[in-house]
Structure formats: C-alpha cells, structure tokens
Image (cartoon, rainbow, N blue to C red; front, side):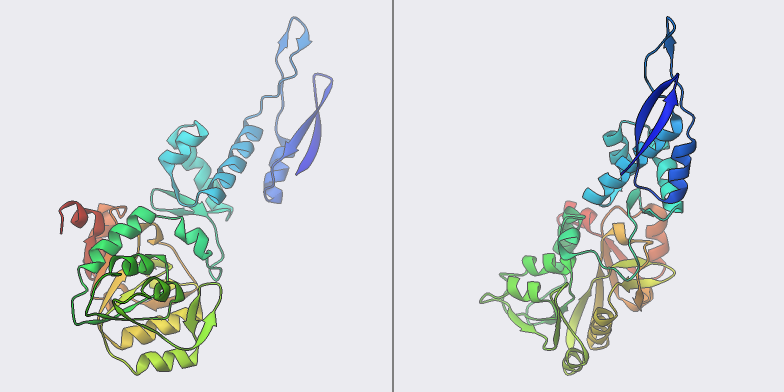
Length: 309
C-alpha cells in the first residue's frame, strides 16, 4: 500500500493508493480532487470519481479472490452499485488482465498453466457439481467397468456410487480411491508417479497401465471447455492420462460445470465432438446450449434432477 498526499483547500490530505498496475496508479495520482466549502470553511471531504472507481475495483478484486466466480448480480449487491456499473468495472479489469470474464460474472485471472488448488476448486459450483454427478451416476450400470477422471466433479460421482455393488472403478485420483475404499465397488488405483498438488497418478508408467485395460465408460473432467478449443486442462501430465483413458473406453461422458465454458487452459484434451455426451448445469445460455448440441449430445443436470430422472 502506498500513501499519497494531496492539497485540498490548503489542507494536506493522505490518500491510500490501491495496489493495482502502474497505469492505475497514475490515474490515482492524476485524479481531480475537490472539496465543498460551507461558510468559507473546508469540510475536508474529497470527492473524486476516479479514486472512488479505483477503490471499488480494489474491493471487487479482493471479493473475487475470496469468492471465485461471482455473478454480476452478486457483485452488484455486495458493492451496492448498479449492474451496469459492475459490467463496466469488469470490462475494464478484464482488459487489464486482472480478472477473467466468465458466464454471467467474473473470476480472478489465472495463468494458463497454473491450476487452481484442490481447496479452491472444491469451493466453486458445488451444487452444480453434485447435480452433474447425480445425473452421471445414472449412466453407470451393474457389471460395468468404468474409469473416473481426477478432479472435484469426478469426486462427486464417486460419492454417488459408494454403495453400488457389482461395478469396477479405475482411477488415477487418490482422493477418489479413498472415497471408494469400502467393500463396494471394486476400486483400482492406476500405478505411476504421484503429482502431489492434485494427488493424481501420472507419467509413462501410468499411461502404459491404462492402455492395458478396456472400459465401458470414461467420465472425463476438464479445466475449461469451448466450441473452438474443445476440452482443456492445466497439466500436460494429466492430459496424457485423460487421453489414454479415452482411447481405452467404449463411451466417453464429459462432466463439467458451465462456469468453465468459454474458458481457456494450457493444453487441449479433445474436441467436443470426441465425446458421446456432455453433462453440465443450467448456467449455460440457450444460445450456447444450441451450439454445443449441434456438435454432440448435451444434458442439463438440474433439469433432469428436477424431473426426477
């Protein structure tokens, strides 16, 4: 934090500068400051649209850091400003690379190769992930051998099938193996090198192990997805394992929430048309639903859950 002094009607005032890029600091320094005079006396108030905007931007960034993937309406309510003001703020911050616009809102901008931690991801779109997992579980039948990808959405699927018998589950995820480490179902953890941050098994040994087996269905998760770039992820090592599972599976079902749609990540996994079905939540707009449905089959989890399917 930096302190600036300005003179208002002969009074020296200290202003705390927002921790934003240098251009924003220059805007702050150049802000027009004024004060109202009542009966010839300065009331020592500083009125500056620029400084108020910068302060609001600082609050918005702090808010998104603590609560990723807020919607425009949620930000508007928390900051007590109009949604039009929020959209202007998001546009400016997005252009400066401080945030990333997502469907109906924004999140803190992240480098393409930097994956959010497991804890961060476990706090995002939990209701949507549970709904997606509930629908996905209907595509798992007795006698099948399935493969579950790594990630928090796939973990929700594991929770749905904890008490299912007569199925076999293969995974490269240690957390998923722990959830399923009961009498049912039969769980196989792929051997290989452990990637500690994700608690996932990766590397050449893991790829070769996957290739030895054949699966009825692979439930694919992704860090981002879009029409142009398909399914993407942050880790090259994880992508290699995902692709190995895809090559060994009769059916591929992608399970990914709508907040990741139109996002971008480091490496492409596959095109949308390479999967048999995409299960997502109802945060996807009607226009995007139509576009995705033209490429592959699409199911909206909440709608199916509400109908009791």
